[in-house]
Length: 328
Image (cartoon, rainbow, N blue to C red; front, side, top):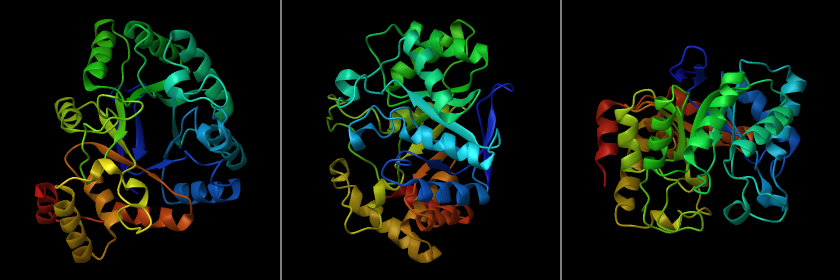
């Protein structure tokens, strides 16, 4: 395994594995025995960065979520896991009532919600301090200063380490970070957005983003990452839920544009040259690039995890990386 540091403050920064493991469906779609086996193998291989959220996976059974955090809490207790495994969780998108969604009935990012939701996450996970806590989605109904101060208060109290943000417009992220810096408060240091080798259209409206997706790491966010060396991007859905290799998994509609075939062709060429799978090339391309990107992979079996773990040792040549980057 290889490692990199997230965060800049010596008091809160952490060294984590270059490959993060997503626990979104653990305890719901993926049963406990399988989830434990995947987690055990990940840690055995040197993995130290596990990701969840307080609302995972509410859509499976019409609940409010929490199954993933609860399972991770049981796993941590049964295995005696402590600070050596960094657990990241998120708040802000938990439905306020069972059978509803976060778009029209989410918990939001008020100071009260931040405190109460973080406390519930700590209880479910069995952690005195949350290693990394994200604002899951934006909340335009609450002043950003309240949100910034709400997160910072938990850091000051020692119940949260690092702060992160996901699925927000770059200008909103920068405004929140500027508010924090101006008040000498800790701000967001880890960004979690969808990012893969193929490039999506960013103008396709969704229920959450009617003006076009803010969940993808587009050129503006990558430029922001380049300009702010203290930031790290955790890239979710890097393998597009299997679409690179599985014929039963078509590419999402926002990847249906003229630039996709050219990039797919180069990806497959490099996979043949290296003897690796397209999935492994995508992960190696992210992990070994010039920007600090940590791919966040999901796995529903140990075999899937093994394929992902093998990408850590895949070294792309400078020429291969240049070809991958230039395809469009």
